[in-house]
Amino acid sequence: MNKNKHVNWKRNFITGICFAAALMVFAVLPAQAQQPAVSIIAPEWVEGTTCYATVEINNISNLDAGQFDLSFNSSVLKVVDVGNGDIQGTEIPVQWNSIETGMIRVIFNLEGVTGISGSGQLAKIDFEVVGPGDSTIGISNELLVNTQANKINADWGVTAATGAHKSTPGFGAVFALVGLVAVFCMVRSSRKS
Image (cartoon, rainbow, N blue to C red):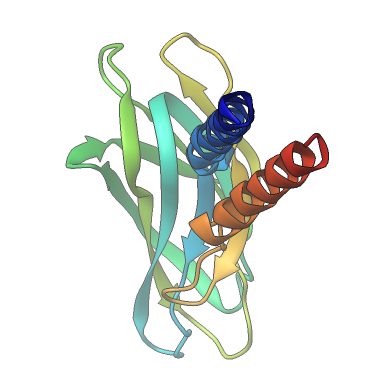
């Protein structure tokens, strides 16, 4: 009988270790799975007004420099100015120029080599709505670089409605996976008895 208690204790201990290991592995996954995401948040265009669109960035790490082109319908929108961005209280100094009708290029380079991490805005675009119609803002020729001069992979989005963002994996999926691993470990240990 004493030997049976030892076997049960050993089986429960191994099951507990499996569950704890799975919990630790899957609890870290959401943080690692979230790569930087860039999106354009734009208002509804109303003819005869000035509107602002922002180029938003989330989950960036060690950012030093970058560039991107923005395209738009020039019969509806006219770029008046492009303002500096802000990430975690650090100003992102931008320069911009028109490269063709309906397209501008925005570039930035942070001073020094410390890099910046977090979420915020890469730029604020001041548009004059010059005509009726629809215009989405497209983004292309995008590049983000870290302080080691390596390209940062990011998910580059398109025009989004105010307040809309892409969904990212949440803890619900993680806990479901942890639960499956725990059930698997318990079923396996019960079959051995």
